[in-house]
Image: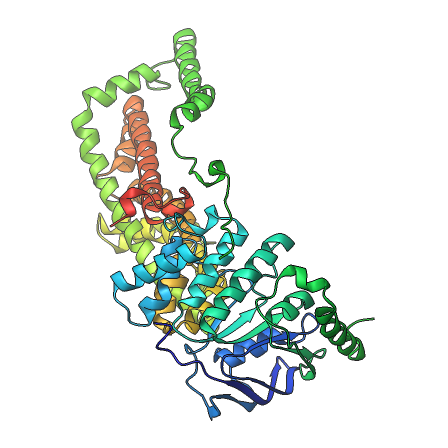
Amino acid sequence: MSEAAPSSSIEARALTLALGGTPVLDGLDLRVAEGEFVALVGPSGCGKSTLLSVLAGLAEPDAGDVLIDGRAAPGRLGHLTLMPQSDALMPWRTVLGNVRVGPLLGGASEEDATAAARRTLARFGLGGFEDHYPHALSGGMRQRAALARTMLGGTRMWLLDEPFGALDALTRADLRGVLAETWMRDRPTTLLVTHDLDEAVLLADRVLVCGPRPARVVGEVAIGLPRPRTLDDLVDPAFSVPRAEILSILRSTGALA
Amino acid sequence: MSTAERLPAASVEAPSAPRRGAVLRRSPLALLPLSGLLAWQMIVWIAAPREWLLPSPADVAEVMWSDRGRLWFHAQATIAESAVGFALAAVLGMALAMVIAGSPAVGRAVYPWVVASQAIPILAVAPLVAIWLNYGTAQVMVAFVVAFFPVVVTGVDGLRGVDPALGRAMRTLGASRWWTYRRVTLPAALPTLFSGLRMSAVFAVTGAVVAEYVGADRGLGYLSEFSTAEFRTARSFAAIVLLALIGLAFFGAVSLAERIALPHRRHSVRPTWRRS
């Protein structure tokens, strides 16, 4: 069913939002082209999660617009899949029960949803764990299941909110690989929020740098490096240059000393 | 695809089977009440009080058998009153919890009254209820009132404590508000709610008995009260023992319902009885 859903561009225009009197977004502009992978890095608490909520349609901005394929999209909730940092798996459902929610909500039959979920779980190395409850799995396996659920969400616009932020470094590296591979297969339009520079450089086509709150995009670095990229590439100068560029932008915002 | 993570089998398997060992480990503690019974029997043997003052456990057991027809008749009444009172408390308490948790304005208006109602001693109110309502209804009413509060409190806590990330993720997958409430919020609140339901089930029995003491024509509370008045102390004890057993049974029934409703709390893998 992911083949059927269109991959579209996501655009934010002059998004402004205050929460409880505190400005969180201040005229934020960004654009993720169709099938593009964009990473957004910035200091903690700069309003990145709020931005994703607004893009997903879970919250409306005070001013500004969210455009999908260049058109205003007031009914976009449900058309962009949000993957939170916590895996947000339902503890009372098995791994299979959690992952097949997307197709079921998309109107698939029980059999089709189950078959699609089983296929995806097998591809994500979770074959044999379909009937396990999430608490019986490691953090990395749970996040794999969450990624499988996002993939089967039936949309081809992904908003990833620090999806690997709570994992240890090794598991994170492993899951980055899974995400990169999945993205290369499906090419969904993807916006990844992260504060891990390596993650941004390894995964994204473009990295946007976000200033301290209220959030605005203060800089942009293109990562014109061939895929697939691996951890070993990180020591390559071709990677350390954009990485250094991102760092210097972050420094100029005062987010780094 | 990179290689799948593999957990050591031991951490994946459910710790379900070794029941026997657990019982053996608990057995010394299980003997504690038994030794209490034995001490009671010894005291009666040595001090030899009049039977109406302190009957021995053996006397109580004897009455439980010889008077079983009467005891069972009254037990049925108490069980029915408690069960209906508890069921009403569970349904209406959860409904009120949903309203309070769903609307902060209603919550602020109603919640203090629910809490304040608990400060009124039920023993003082029960005679009034007995005047206003007929036998049977009064017992159900008092059982309901005492069982209601834990359901509301744990229901509200459970609903308010649901991780919003769960519902938000489902909403972006296309779930409606109603679907999210029914399939995410309510199930997520269940574990907390069940703690309240277990307390409520026991409270309901106590409530029914309190109401039987102040005005009833049947029930174990009524039987115990008039047996004491007639100095049939052994029968009074027998009624109390049965009441304790009924309270335990109610607690056990809710615990069993919890195990069936929430298999993930005790199992790592979906148990076969949950597979279709």
